[in-house]
Image 1 (cartoon, rainbow, N blue to C red):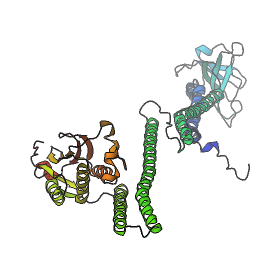
Image 2 (cartoon, rainbow, N blue to C red):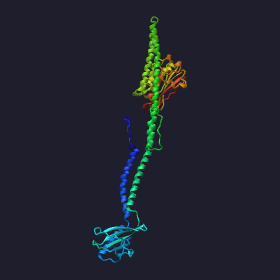
Image 3 (tube, rainbow, N blue to C red):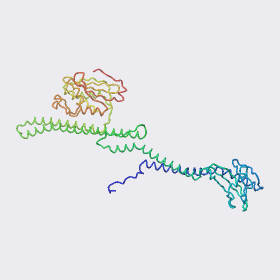
Image 4 (cartoon, rainbow, N blue to C red):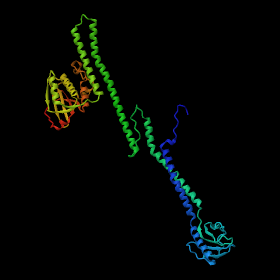
Amino acid sequence: MSPGSSPRRPRLRSTPARLTVLALATAIAVLVPMGMVGASAAGQASADPGWSGAREQAGITAAAAGRRNLTGTIETQTPGIDLIQVVGADHRVIAASPAARGRDPLSQVRPSPDHPQADVEVCDKNSGRQCLRLAAVRLSPAPASPVVYAGRMVPLMAPSRTFQLLWIAQIALLILLATAATWKITSRTLRPIQLIRARLAAINVSDLSIRIPQPHGHGEIAQLARTVNHTLGRLEQAKASTHQALQRQRQFASDASHELRTPLAGLRVRLEEAQMHPRDTDLPDLIGHTLEDLDRIQDIMTDLLLLARLDATAPQATQHVDLTNLIRTETGRRADRHPAVLNLAERVVVDAVPGQIARVLTNLLDNAQRHATSKVRVRLRSSATHAELVVSDDGDGVPPADRERIFQRFVRLDAARSRDRGGTGLGLAIARDIATAHHGTLHVEQAAIGGAGFVLRLPLSTPAEQAAPQNPGA
């Protein structure tokens, strides 16, 4: 492994491997003790048939033989135990049950004096299907003591060790199945997560349109995939919005530079000409034109600063503003060539920054005065939820194709809306930005008096909502 390479992570660190090891340990901890108990019980069960009854009958017969000498026929007192013999030390049958009469001694095994009881199993070597299970009891420690045999024929069964091996094999098989099933299920369950991880690793900032595979259903992994896709969608939208904002900033910087260059260039030309021909220069005229250019530069800079504050700063604290009084106050301060005709509803109150709303009204009135032929009208009315202010003129109006473009910064439609007619090209852009900051709208439409009608809509404040709306005619 190279010095700069990272060590390969052990496979045990994967979630399927950890779960599989946990399942294996659990299966071993649970199934092995159960298997040992089961194997022991199975071995005991395989060996038990015939022994308990044989021991009981052998004990009964031995007790009877100890009280009296048994000869002849022995009565069976334990159900199922039909083969009983009392065999002397010389291997002669002293007494026997009806089923064992006439047979040779059932067994040649004689318990020792130290261990007077023994279990004996004699299988038929010819058929290989039956075994004789006997309980042998020595009557006394004396060497010539008779031995009692009691038992029956039982089907040949597998040795208890075989049963134990079968139980062990079953437990081992169950453990392997549990381990394999855990590995397969966890691997299959977590496969979508691996796909999600791989797809996310392939996503980069330059392309956020990629989406991860989304499983069907409503499980946790499906919900995770949907959440990741929604997040990617929001990131893509944020990236697009950021890109658009950067493009607008670049365009704005370019337009601002162009707008400032024009008056600065004119000012420089006049000053250079005066420097070259000082005697031919009309000083009052030069100063007048210079001040005009400086005024224009100052107006542009003021509007640029206002736009920058609207874009970059947090919203200012709003207050209840009576639009009716504000319009009357602002129009009363103006000395326009076409006095505005007012048509105002009473007590139309909105939540706004008074200075910004006054700036919107001033920009709309300046625009109307520049393009009006003889009439400028201001109408204010309220609906159930909004206040509507309309400033209209009887000029040429705005073509439908340009009714959105005029709200862009530094946009002028024709020579009639040129720099010679005044304005910085930012008034309508500022007005719309202020309307948007107040959760309102600003658009232009055809006015009833023939020119352009700029419509400002702002949400009413609570007191205005409680008042009865007034809608005077146009």
